Image 1 (cartoon, rainbow, N blue to C red):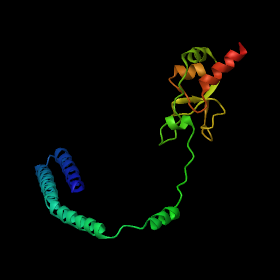
Image 2 (cartoon, rainbow, N blue to C red):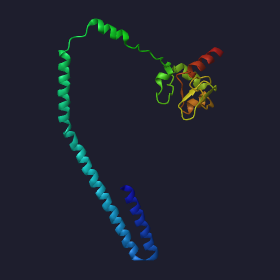
Image 3 (tube, rainbow, N blue to C red):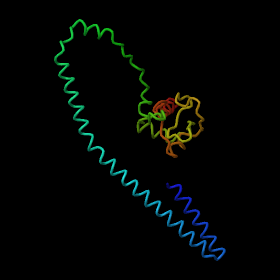
Image 4 (cartoon, one colour):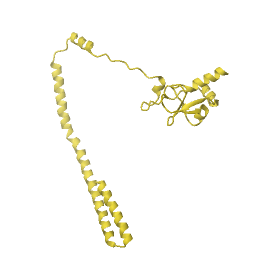
Length: 197
């Protein structure tokens, strides 16, 4: 419906331009007629949608009767179950023994738990203030990945096959990158700096 209205409006615009260029009022009247037809189609579409919404709003009123019937069926099933004899204990034990054993999945490392599940983004390393002060002064090279907020050590497992950009840790921090919780660059760099000193 809206596609037809769009075509009518474009045709009316074209005819209006033709009327202005040729100074022929017939084209202008046809343009007005097409515009009126497009407006009427929009009004008809609005009324049709409004009626459909009212019908949809009226339908849930009929559902409580169906729900009541479902409740009666459920009550009958409960009553039937209450009348049946109880399960023998030996049968219950056999059912438990035959049940499949649920295997526990391996848990990801702590850095993966903090990140977003959708992209597998590692979380942010909680940096000790003393380490942060040391790292702010270093010109050691770390790597970043375009469109990701963390900086990493070059051997970080999260990097895998991603394209990395080498950058100094000081510049990375100045640009707003944060340390990766998986490879903990701040802790490693601060520890290496203390070892040298």
